Image (cartoon, rainbow, N blue to C red; front, side, top):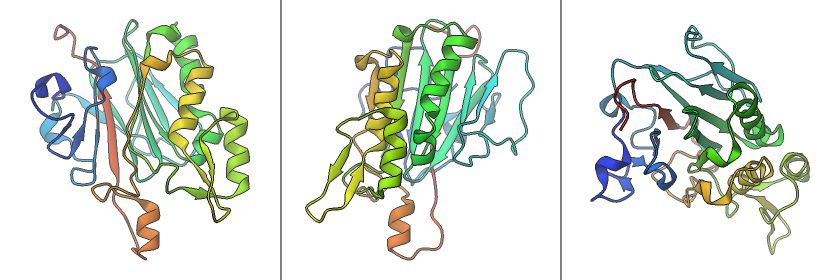
Length: 251
């Protein structure tokens, strides 16, 4: 299994400056965390080697892959930006470098989800799509759903055009996640926009956790926009990973 936040009760939430354990999962059976730039996508030393790791090929879509018990594992070339599963023999994950990584857990039905939501995915309502599938495919109740929204570029640093703002508003509704700067530029906070989508789907506000970290501001994270500003050709990625306890290992 993953090393969970419960193993680090005497340590900081951001253990070792490379693993971020959301408080929302602390007393649940979900085992999930976000990484920073120093660890990136490497989770070998914190993951159960007997479990398969599945990360989809992300293309800023609203495609959701559902992996039911007894189903075959998709190929690594499977295009999707979200994965839902009730299997306890796999770890699902997504990667990001400014986009919003989201982990979802139904504590009653024992279903997990991992989501990559950039502005395009947010505008397409990918989190709403995932929650609808939780409700329809697994008969989840919104009151049982816990959501962790990981480190991403925040409103302080994410300047966008009117077309992005209009597209996100169409999916998330009006809200205080849009800022007008003294210079006249418009900034948007996609983490808050996704939170609003979850609230509109009936998720309780106390069941939603958002990382305070901005990937552009905080140098330990990979940031696509920072790399662009610095004329860096490529940038790395952070990861978001979640799994269920293996059968017989639940508390």
